[in-house]
Length: 234
Image: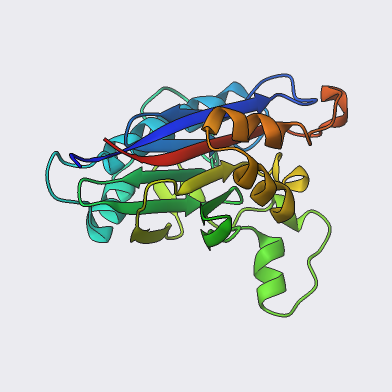
């Protein structure tokens, strides 16, 4: 074995939105997905900048591995420099990386969800960082609209709230699934696990998952994106 890499694929649907503000990036060692909050072009510009920055932070050195401190500090130095945008602009961020030591990293901010799967079972899953999830964890009853109120996210000057960072030993065949909140209502765990059990190629997994989206984009209320990465030995 000379190293580790991802084989990856993605599928998007714009839904009823006038523009696609979900954006993703796929490389040999890093996959990233961001959902720009709102429907403006500013949201997409920030999301694009954030996935590019996350890919740089998580790109592993040629030898050795990543560290949680380096990843957290790398995210904290993000500053948006793409032009004038609303000060309250925000985006979610999901990212996964496999480093030279064979460690699998997952980073999350916002209400998109990352899941790692091995042998048809879930190994780890990120929490949704929104008011609804927060209220539920505290034993409360979420109010109408709380699902859309982010409690952690990437802003113009880096993370608002700490990113969740999960790490585990990678094995060939491990599957990482990143999905935005527009996709999640149609991606139940039985649907996701069945897609992973039936297919090995990431292209086939994303297509199997996308079959459960509404057949008409007009019935899909938000942008929806799924990214699937499969760990391989080089």
